[in-house]
Length: 358
Ligand SMILES: NC(=O)c1ccc[n+]([C@@H]2O[C@H](COP(=O)([O-])OP(=O)(O)OC[C@H]3O[C@@H](n4cnc5c(N)ncnc54)[C@H](O)[C@@H]3O)[C@@H](O)[C@H]2O)c1
Image (cartoon, rainbow, N blue to C red):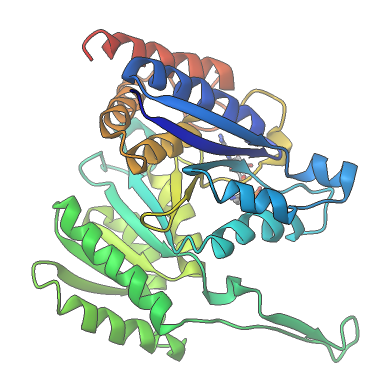
């Protein structure tokens, strides 16, 4: 009996539906080649749905989505709608509600010509960022006082809990061990200025004592931004807070080839987890067939790995790596000269080439 994976799909806004369409073609082909089954449930949430119905994300759908094995998200966000309304109502609701406390962002360069850094190649850019995903300023504890007046005060609380920091730090130590590469974990924070981050410093030391085989390093976020450009080879596994992780991983994405290739998993180990490209809805490119679907295909690779389809995940990663090394994609941006669907075709061709060897 072949295994069935139940996947909830929210294609979302902007370029989301285009990149998800290509991702699902690849997922479908993987299932056929590897002998597992996929049951998809599509959900319409996002800008168009909101404009038509005034509904952001109904409770019944949220509950139903949580009962799947995994969730695939395209992107959420639309300039016609109040800033943050849909992002908070859909993305944050899933991340916080399902307690997806790890945001995992691999930064891996597959081919030297895709890296904007001089003299850096695939051996230099291969690390993974573990971003805390449920706390920090993103917890939504905010307010305005005397809004719109010259005396206005705006606040938003940065929240770190002992439990929240400890579980993500422990996950990162385990990952550094499992990766077995440099066996090094770098804590990135700003404890010198944001003194609440002393909690991270203490937890990192305490949990780290249980992992004597993992070397511990520390960078302030400003220095980490410098090092990731100057010496990306210094990083193996990075653990950081929600906001710093958000920013640091967009910068890191650029050295692996750009937003067109960067994928992520929002994970609660052992529970339903969500996989998505790290990019947003890129509204100005929506409907033009120029967005690169490789980031979404990378998210599907992470999802397959999470679901236990390790061979499929490895084959998919190898197929993407071969395609990128072949230089058939001159860039991973919107200027590659290839349509979103044509890039999907190229990945399928690569998969076809190794299918007979399975
Ligand atoms: N998880 C999410 O759904 C998510 C993440 C980030 C931003 N957003 C939302 O998306 C909207 C747009 O945000 P933004 O413009 O700041 O960031 P964005 O990531 O959508 O786009 C920034 C730029 O990156 C490039 N890019 C992004 N995806 C690409 C792809 N697949 N292929 C090639 N190039 C790509 C484009 O040049 C684009 O203009 C906003 O509403 C924002 O809130 C959503």
